[in-house]
Structures are given as C-alpha cells and as structure tokens.
Length: 601
Ligand SMILES: Nc1nc2c(ncn2[C@@H]2O[C@H](COP(=O)(O)OP(=O)(O)OP(=O)(O)O)[C@@H](O)[C@H]2O)c(=O)[nH]1
Image (tube, protein in one colour):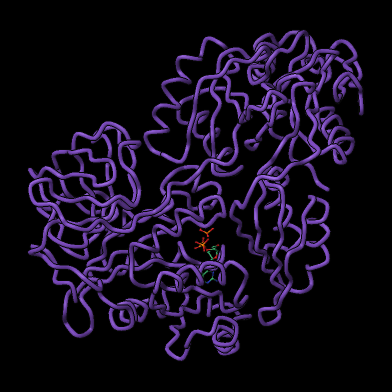
C-alpha cells in the first residue's frame, strides 16, 4: 500500500554548524517511535565512524518517520539529511532538490549565522516552504524573541509561526512534528497510474546487497520484478528489492508517488548510477526525463601510495571499493620514482581528500602516503599543443612550455563586519582580486576572484579561524588564466622528493618554500645524522633548514633487568616507524606529506 500524497511530507533540516541539526533529527526519530529506546545512540544519522568522530555529516541519509498527528491522521515524514561542509555543497543541493520543505534550525542563543544564510538560500532557491525552529531555548543566554526578529529582518522569512524548542531536553519537539504536517506542503505532483518516473538521489555500495539506490518516486510505482531503465545512461536493471530506511533498512512491497526509498538490483558499481538521472520502467517508459544534475567535478588531485609497496594490491582493491560508494572520487594508476606504484586520485576538495585517505587507512587497514594536492593546470607548449597537468611531478622541461594557465574561482564570502579586515587580507595574500563588496544587514558580502590553487589547501580553515566560524564561503569555477607559475622541488638530505613538489606562483615561492622547510623540520624525526631540507626552483635553492643528529634512546630509562618492558618499548618504537617511508636514508612520516602544505599565513 502506498501512502496518499497529501499524507506525505519530504523535508530536510538546514542549519549553521552546531545549531543542533543532528540532535533534533535524533529527537524526531525517537518521538515517532521509529527506533526502540534501546537502539537509540546519539546522532544516529551520522553513521560512519569518521563522521561521528569529526562531528560532521558527509553522506546524505534519509529516514522515514511514521507519525500520527494530533488530528488522528497517519503521516509519512521523510527526513533527508544533508552534509554541512563546503566540499559537499553539491550533495546539499541535490538533497534539497528532492524534497519540498525545510526546517531551518537557528540556535536561539547565537542567532542567524553565515551558514544559516547560505543553507537557507539554497532551500529557498529550491522553492522550499520553511518552518523556522528556534533551538536551545533551555540555555540561559537564549533570546528567542530577538532571534525571531533577526530571522525576519536578515533572511526575510515570516517567523511568526516559529517553533521554540530544546532539542536537548525534548521541549517543544512534538510541535515541530505538527508544524511539518501543517506548514510544509505535500509532494506537488504524482500520478500513481502514470508510467514510473523516479529521481536517482544517491547510491552507495553495501557488502551484502551490492549497490543500493536511493530514489524519490515522482509518478507510478516501483516494485520487485520490474525492469527499470536509467534514462541518462540507457542501462536496464531488474528490481530485486524495494524498501525504506527507518533508519535501519526495511523491505516494502512497493514505493509510490512522493515517496523516498531504495531499490537494489543487479547493479555492479555506483559508477553505473548517475545522481539526478531519471529512472523509468522499461516496458512503459515516461515521456519526459527530469532536468537532472550536472556531475560533481573533482577539483583537487593527489597521489596515494602504500607505505609498504607490497600493499599495492590491497590499495587497488580498496580504491575500487570506495569508488563504489563515492562516484565523486576518481582514480587512475600512477608510478613515482620515490613512492613506487600508487593512484592519482581526484577529490571535491581537501576535506574530501582527508576523509578518503582516512577511510582507506581505517576501513582497509592501509598505511598510505598522500602527495601534495594539486589543481589541474593547463600547459601551452611551444609546439602549439596543450597538456593538462594533474601532477607537478609530470611537468615537462620549462624550455618546452610557452605558458601555464591555472583554474580561477569566483568566491562569495559572508561575514560579520568585525572580521572583514582579516578576510580581505587573507584574500589579498592568496592573489585574490576583489570583485564586489556589499552589505546584507550587518554582514559584509564579499565577492572575490581567486586562483583555485590558493584555496584548496587551507583557505576554508583559515577563513573559519579568522572569523571564529561566522564566515560562510561558497565558490564556483569560472575560467583558466595565465599565471607566472614555477615548479618548486623539495630536497631531503640532498635528494628530491617528487611527491612533495608543487606548482607555486613565483612571487609566493620563497615564502612557501621557507614554510615547507620549517614544517618538515618539525615533522621529520631526528636521525643519527644531520639532514638538510631544501626548497628549490630549477637548480636554485630558495630555502633551507637542517635537522640536527640525535638518537632517542627509548630504553635508557629501563634500568637493568626488565626485558619484557624493554622489548615492549622497542616494539612500540617499531610501530611508530611503520608509518614512515624511507627516502634514501631518511624516514619521513606520512602526515608530513599533507601537513607540510597546511601553513598559517
Ligand atoms: N543546551 C542545548 N544544547 C543543545 C541543544 N541542541 C543541541 N545542543 C548541543 O549543541 C551541540 C551541537 O548539536 P548538533 O546536533 O551536533 O549540531 P549540528 O547542527 O547537527 O552540528 P553538525 O552536525 O556538526 O552540523 C551539541 O553539543 C548538542 O548537544 C539544545 O536544545 N540545548
């Protein structure tokens, strides 16, 4: 039995980070009895370990809540969770596109903040109805009336029906459920008798079921035994199972118009499923496909190599498995003089890179080295040809190069006025060109053109720290522009480490080189001999540091007899060594490769 359209509500929760989105989601799940009390653990939706530890949501999730409203009617509420970081802005927009309404959660002690704006504008762009929820009213510092006015003034939303709650204590949360039913619209269209038309919202790989595809049904029904067709790719599959998330997977006989759910079939790879694609029934196809989304483009590339060359096969299997789950991650094989066989991988941003690296290490038990992240450069060669450079190590001889172009972005930054000076300086230091400065209430809205190369490393982290987390940041790629770029090599103990080479702007080379050498000095442990660390352009050394010789004798404090203790310590030291990679005679810890690039200005 499918649910009638007017008894379905599909919504997401949008909020500034830490305003209580996950806590509210947990309460809604609990209140609707979707989970037994004993199965509740905090922040159910942040299911991956890394998400839990980092407290961020990466992959969009969905939960079906069954709710009997005060009017006695039974409703199906689908909560579509959205990720919160700028690297995943793309996932936010596609999750929002699949539902009709949003809960805007604002911390009643903090008020509207930058990401509140960025996220709510995305919801408004998707024609969402919005319920304003003022959270944390239990806090002594909460000022719900003032914040209600602020929401009206700054965002321009009617907040007269705002729901005042404490997601922590549960106060007011039942009113949120009523507001969802009465203030958010049901799905706008949906004809159960029409040919199947469904939107592919997301897909991931499950060890037991293979690829699981999350769909939003527009028209018709989807059920076991149907042959469906992906209209974008033309691929056909037999539906083997349909179901919903509560949040655990539960099979259902069929999915009807307006509903969210999943299906599984004989789909081998996530790459076979294109997010935004229209799914229809092969036997009776719909005439018109949905508008669809443009695929997410990797913007940052880096090499991933096993610390132990013998683990390459394991890495090959692991990247293949991860890709099953994350189509925005791309890879191809690479060989490096220093690091042997590995993969050149493409990511949506630096956080995405770190997450993939961490998952490979944790879930697949691999020790990896990540090389310097790089954007895609365009080289105009003297022979008239154009070469795309994903890896600074592949840079041809400079005499062959006529010019180098790099990708530029247009960035929009919203910040309270207090931090404007610091942010202008940051943008200026990163070779930014100011395009506009205007005001949204008391907030400055800055538009800057910046080279992507200057943004991928740590721009977002810096922006957050300068603005104490208040600034929001969004960007899109605009064009390629010529730049005075040079390849900087890093030499450790007189030997170039190709994995640390990078392209930098000539004017920034010396500063970067110095910072890299200083950072590497901190990160590389002392050895029995002196180790020079140098940064060079062409043959010219532009910065140098030296690590003095020393041996840390860990057994020195075990006087005499206790052999077991001594062995334990030596084993521990060996364990520490495992995560190092030998370059010539020098051990370089794997964090050095990524940490060296994150430098304060
Ligand atoms: N006092 C109080 N604290 C709350 C309330 N709701 C959430 N919190 C706390 O605020 C912090 C952030 O809550 P989360 O639910 O993790 O916030 P979030 O918006 O999901 O954060 P991200 O997932 O990181 O974007 C946690 O420490 C919560 O315990 C509330 O109503 N009152």
